[in-house]
Image (tube, rainbow, N blue to C red):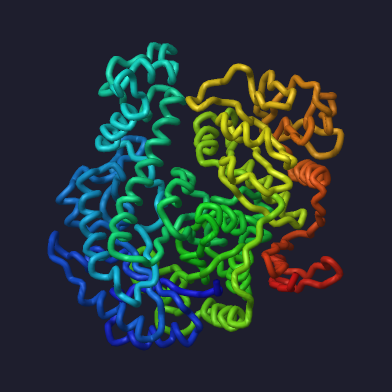
Length: 639
C-alpha cells in the first residue's frame, strides 16, 4: 500500500467562496486525504430533527472534484446545546460527584441510553446519505475516546448500567444473577462490605478511604466495555450502508479503555501524534530530557504509540492528526525545530503507517484552538508545516510501498495491567505504562525494532524474544502459551501478582510453569533509596524479593537475586534504572542470539520489510555504523 498524506479540514469554519481554492492547494501540496465533519453536529442538525446536509454535500463535492479522498467523521464527540436540554442527565460526572458542563466537547456519559439513541440516529442519517458517495473513502467514529478524562463517569446512568453489567458477569443457577458470587469474588467479608442485592452496589468513588480494589477493577472493565459498545453501535450502522473502512483516532497515553477491544470493530487504528504537546505531562522523562527535546519531542514516545496502534489495528494504522507547529494546550508550547515535521512524518511511515494527516489545514482565528498551528496561518499564508509536508509528499512519491515486517522482539502491553497498577500502585508514582515504556526505550537504545502485542497466546508466535514486564494478571491460557513458547521470555517485576478478581493468588506469584521462583514479599522504594546492583545500576521504585533455585544472573550488593533464569525464562526482580535496564536488555538479547547496537543520544533505527530508517532527533551530528547522521535528520536505506 502506498504511503499517503492528508489533513483535517473544517469547511463549516470558512467562507464558501474559498473552499475550491483550499481544495486546490491541498491537492497541489501532495495531500490525498481530508477529514471533515467530526465536530459539526450543530450545523448538521441545528434543531432536533431538522437536518441540514446541503453544505456538507457541497463540501464533499468540492473536495472530491479536486481529487481528494474524504474521511467523514461522525459528530458524536460534540453534542449540540439542544441535546443537553433534551437529556439534562447525559453529562458525565467526575470522581468528586460534579457533572460536566456544556461549552467544550466530549460532554457525554457513555452509559446514557437517550444520548446513545440520538447518536445512532445522526450516524444513520449520515451513513444513509453518504455511504455510497464515491468521494467518501473512509469513516471516523467520534473523536479521541477518553480525551480530557471522559471515559469514566460516576453518573446515575453509569451506576444503573454498572449494576446490570455485574448481573451479567456474576450469574448463578439458571442464569440468575448471584450476589453471593460477587461477594466472594470481591472479598466483601472484609470490613463488612457484603451486599444482599445488586441494586445496593454503588460506584467506587467518594468512599472514606480507598474502595475495594476488586470493585474498582470491575468498574474499570465496565467503563471500557461501555466505550466498546458505544463504538460498535456506530460501526454496525455505517457497515450497513458503506463498504469504506472505518477508523477511530486514539490518543497518546490514554489507557482508560481497552483499545484492542475497540479496535476489533474497526478496520484501521489511528492516533493523534503531538510530540511537543505530550512531552511535558505524558512522557516519562527527567527534566533534563524534556529540556533536551523541548523542540523535537521524545525520541521514543511517538514510536511507542506507532507500534501500539499497529497492534490495535492488526497491521493497518494511520496518524489522523500530526502536530505541524506549536499547539495550544500543553504546559509549554514551543515551535518545533525546522525539519521535525518531516522527521515525525517519516518516523510514522517507518513504523508502518499508511497515512499521516496533519492537524489542521488552516489555523483557527477563534475559540479554544486559535493558538494551535495549522499548515496555513489564519491569513492563509503557508506555515512551516506545509513546507515540510510538501517535501514529504515529494519524497513518498518515489518511495517503496508500505512493507511491514515482523520484528524479532515482542513487548506485551495490557490495558488491564495498567488499571491494576493504577488501583494498587503500592508506591507513589508507580505506573505500569512507565515500566513498559522504560523497557521499550532501552530496547530502542539497543537499535532494535519492536512489535507491541496484546496478552494473547496467538500474538506470541514467531518471536525470538518476548518481554512481559509488570503483567499483574496471567490468565491460565496465556500462562500456558508463555510456558510453551520457544522464545526467550523475560517476566517481572510483579508478574502474576493478582488473579482475575484482584486477589493475591496462592501459590504465590509468579507461579510460572518451569520457573522455580516465588515472590516472598514486595517493597516500594523511596526515590532516594535505590538498591545498587553488582553488575552496575540499581533497582529503583519497586522490588520483588525472591525465593528461588534458578540461576542468578545479577544480584544486589547485599547478595539478593535481582535477575534469575531457568531454561528460556528470565525473571526480573525489580524496576531497573536506565543503566541496569540497558545492560539487562542486552543480556536477554544475547541469550536470544539477537544482535544489538549501542545508539547514541536521540538516534534510533527502525527496519521494515524493505528499508532501514535512521532518525537523529538531536541537534548535533552522530557517527553510527560508519556513517554521519546530520542533526534533525532522516536517512533511508534499502535492506
